[in-house]
Length: 229
Image (cartoon, rainbow, N blue to C red; front, side, top):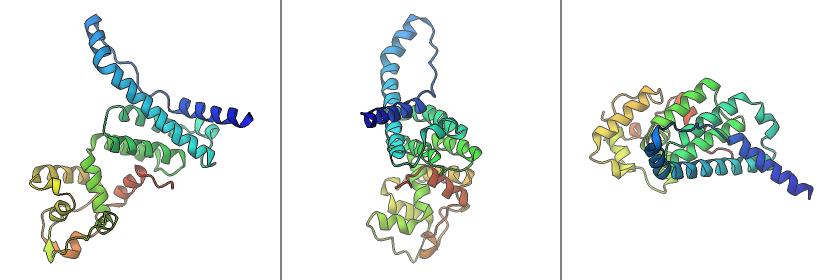
């Protein structure tokens, strides 16, 4: 009986920790209220419930493994800040990959595997502004050879090529989308996540498969990735 009470309490505490982070949406007039209530509120509430339940369950699992302590988390101001910020941002997207990334940021903060508070805030805001393609390309250039290995694919055997050519080999969906790739590449550069300016510059085959992320870029990847298993 005691175990049941403890498990219920842990789950309740987990839910209470992740609760909040989004205020009410102000509307004016009965028509606006009716429209928002009909179109926006149901899916928004569904997103909120799914987010809270998923994060709470994962926090509960970590607590049961003695990886975290709920009492300590309640007084961890950086964790509370991250929960509130990540919750607000996660509710703005329907993309599962980004939601998972926000969850990992919360859980990595809970387990102490996170950068300092300033970087955490910056990383969450960048994650909010990035598309899934930003994240995929960043992970790819962090270690192209490893990416091909995990994908059970052989890396291209270029005598010479460009970074854009090897990215197109990895992601054929991006072929003939040079403008999009240039935009994403510049965004990642402006964030300080790589220092390579010429995405179309010809280089050796080994050169196009070199790691290109900066230490800051690697920190970002670690922050939004599940490294807890």
